[in-house]
Length: 165
Image: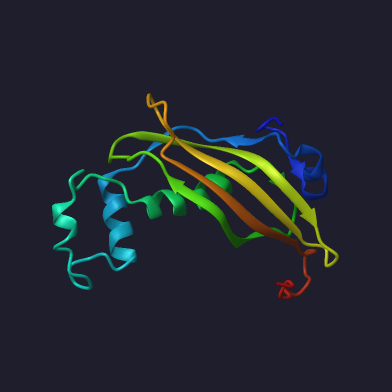
C-alpha cells in the first residue's frame, strides 16, 4: 500500500496483511520526556520518585508508555485512511511488548501493518494494526504493539452519536 495513496475505509479490507504506513524518523527530546512525566503525575509534586532515581539505565531512558502513547501521533500523521467525517477511537491493545530501551535523542519510527479489518453492522469498522517502533541503527525493535481502533463515520452536519461497544 502506498503511503501517498488515500484509502477509503471500506477499501481497507483489501489491504489486510499489507504495510499500512512507515513513518519518518524522529527523536524524542528531554522536554517531551519531562512533559510526559508531568502529565502522568510522575512528578516530584505528586509522586515519590526515590525508586526511579536508582534506575540502572539512567535518567534519559524513555518511558515505555510514552512510546505507546506516540502511536496516536504516528497514526494521525501517517495513516492512509482518508474521508470526511471519519474518526478512529482507541478500542484497546491486544498485545504490547517493550523489547529494547530507547534513550533521549535516539531516532525512532513506526512501521504499521494492517492485521485485520472487521466491518460491523452499525457502519463502524474495527481496524487492527501491528505496530513496530524501530530505533535507527538498532536491529531489535523498541516496542511491538497490536492496536485495535474503532473507526466511525459521520456525514457533514450529522449529529454525533455514540457507537456501539
